[in-house]
Amino acid sequence: MNFTRWSARLPGTQRRAAARTEQTVPPDRRGESPVPAARAGHPASAVDALPTREVLDRVPALVALVHGPDHRLAHVNAAYTAAFGPRAPGTPARDTLPELAELGLFPLLDQVLRSGRPRTLKSRKAVDGRSYTFTCTPVTGHGDRDAGVLVFATDVTDHAEAAERLRASERTQRQTAVTLQRSLLPQDLEEPDDLRVAATYQPGGTEAAVGGDWYDVITLGGGRTALVIGDVMGRGVRAAAVMGQLRTAVRAYARLDLPPHEVLQLLDGLAVEIDANQIATCVYAVHDPNEGRLVYASAGHLPILVRDENGEVLRADEPTGPPLGTGGWVHSSGSVPLGPGATAVLYTDGLVERRDQDLDEGIAALARALSGATGTPQVVCDRLVRSAGVTADHDDDVAVLVLQHPHRTGPAADLFRNAALDLLGGVEAAPRARAFASGVLTSWRFPTELHDLGVLATSELVANSLQHGTPPMRLRLRRTDRRLIIEVTDGDDHLPRRRRAEPADESGRGIDIVATIASGWGSRRTPGGGKAVWCEFLLPKR
Image 1 (cartoon, rainbow, N blue to C red):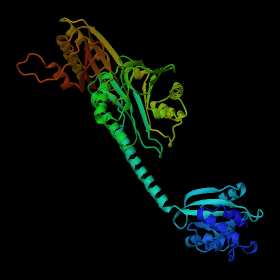
Image 2 (cartoon, one colour):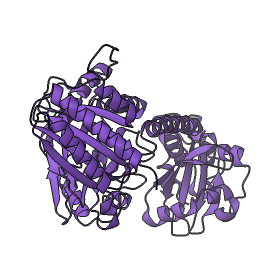
Image 3 (cartoon, rainbow, N blue to C red):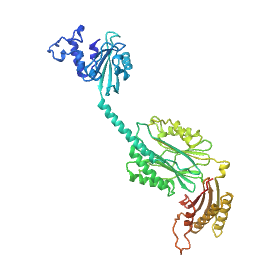
Image 4 (cartoon, rainbow, N blue to C red):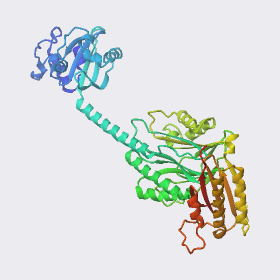
């Protein structure tokens, strides 16, 4: 074995000591007690007299020297013996050093012999329960049978245990954030009468901190449905907590039945109050089956994609304002067609954004996948996630919300009916509205009790509009498979409120009567400057 060459690969002080030892030992007696030899001009020292094996024994790290293609053991130092016990030199290391075999180190030794280059195996736990980093360095001999490998093992147990404690803490924090995130998301989506919806949420991989993605479906009454998706910038518990506050606020603002841009205006101010350094993107949309459109407003969020019944995909880019929390911006609403047979997708950036790809390319790829996606909303949702290459170790959160406006035919279509009447005003308007409602409800084969309640509610809503509203006035009756909806619109934007009329009052009881007999009622301002007042009755279960 050429000790001069392998000792040159020892680290630091040990290498210099081995080099000096080589100078003092005759070739035929290396490894035995040395003969001191002073360098020219320098007296011999105690270090100069140390043999190579004694140098290795004084190294605090674990050292083993093997040679030959079968890795015969040449030497193990005192530290190695203290850790794993004494070993018999001259035997194959596979039998003599079973602890290395358990760590899978022998293929690495073969690789070092073939390549002549050192290799390192980081932080592996050995049979003694401690962790080591193994550096395997080639040792050149006089031939293939003498070439060997110096195995140098550094004890990194303290570092490995600290790293594991840190990883455990990160896992705990991430699990806390994921649990909080999931608990703040809707456990069961509300089911609108006219839409079919599905959603999915997938947190980032185990190495990524959970973000603040959220979605929601909110039935507004009167057949209308609000849909929202958003993404709080940042990671961890803080982002999830801010997300929960915004989602709760959206549900509260939605009950006011405001236009989408006004909802975002309120959210923007709230986001500033929650945390001035935290911003969020959001899309809030409202679907009205009577209009066949999706009215939406966007605060810095990605565009809604809508696939019509022919498979063509529309990208709703405008209008888009800055993210929530920036303040000082007046948001505006836009609309996109969503008639029977159409599918819309709302999503967060984790679905389409990649580090090596332009964002527009990701959105275009999603649009192509949506154009060929058929089936139920859940099937479409799963297909879009798969097409985007989202896996369990994805590096960002993903939230997707899919909604469909089904195209109903046959018996299913009979359960969804509409009837409308324009009211010209005057004393004949109320009797005409009652007669129209009675005829429609009779043709829809409603039971007598529901028929009479519907006619009464129609009379009170029309009377309220005639007294407090202005033309144009319109009565609309709508039935779904679950409820009867009665709505009256007029040109005045003053919203009615329920109040308790005094015994001497001659008016003011209409809305109170409607609220008492109906399952629900409400009012909202319409885009043209007027208002709509509605009530609904649940249908008997079949």
